[in-house]
Image (cartoon, rainbow over the protein chains, first blue to last red):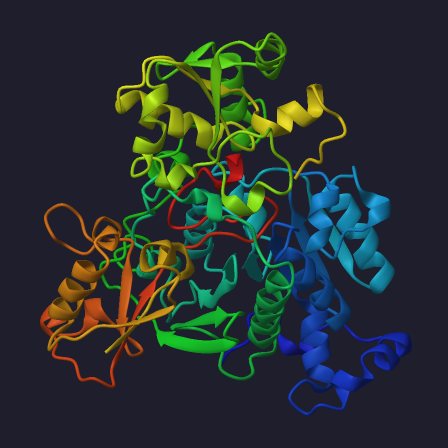
Length: 407
Length: 106
């Protein structure tokens, strides 16, 4: 396995005595040794995202002595990140993630150079950012960026140490090496948004990104050192509940538009490719979409109602029917006392609420997205007066009942 | 034979991680699977009966797309089918799954 480092071996940077002492447990490993440690020092690794996967990844790469760590993130640290994003801490809540991460990395290893890219990775900036790095580690959280990172890696010829997680499951691989397959060989097309109704199954076991992020870091180190068998042409499946690890063979697809036929010669519009509405200049995608829902009085034929209006109606004991469409496990966290029918089961359980067909129905969820979907289903089933609660129970906690927890 | 069901699709198999379904070929196994769990059909197959392009199916550790006989491949009781989901989670917002791009909106 050739090393991912471009520099000639004789030009590798020297280690100071302090570095030799620090990395002694590497230096006495014959597979790393002096030259390997120098390769690590010469290496430049870009961590795309400093969240669940990026946190352990960047920490271990820093500890291992990777010379330059690039961090790309546009977000700020939120307290709810700390359940898994161990690169941030209580004292950096509210800070830019790249600043918070830099503080932790510098605290761990003063020798590392941290390059901060406080921006969203886009088709306009990806190639320019990637070209300065040897290895890219993809720890993002959406399909658009996955395809963007993949295509930019193929176009710039940089290997992609890939990791992905969902609830209790993880995946890892190394994509876009010269001889191996790329992400598009595995997933030629993204799944269409909204195919499966049960999107309420989000969430992730906090330690799982630790597990998968460290696997990514391992692959990055192997690529830099040119040792072992990296996950090229293999997909590692991690099942944390069963604690099973399996690898499946991945093949390079000769017809892959990215790495096979090379018909993708430049980066495309990945939101469009994934069937997602374009983000606006307001900020990240979900902010702009949330806002669009919140601002309009009627969305897709469903009138939107504010928490203030709902409060008035409840206080006036108006004849309304409030329906909660979240999942049962969310109910004990916070609720408005409304009957619960999860959005995924609403079509099959519509008979239970058929008596409210001509009542004023107000549907709510956590933040207003699932309830909009449910409202549309109710309308399609013949309900005549269905409203969606803007901002969901989070808005209620924010504006009406500050004692209610937000999750 | 056993079929491994990924987390996002377990809603449709009453939470089961592995389901055991009879059949002599991959196609037969899938047909029996979707008879037993009808809601899986729409998730795995398009209206013209083809496996959806973003659904990856592995027979043991081989991609079905690269087996010469594809769905017509014969299977033994000891073989295993694995459905590989597209998952994209990793950073800050709620992880996205095969099901949606709206998890981040929850």
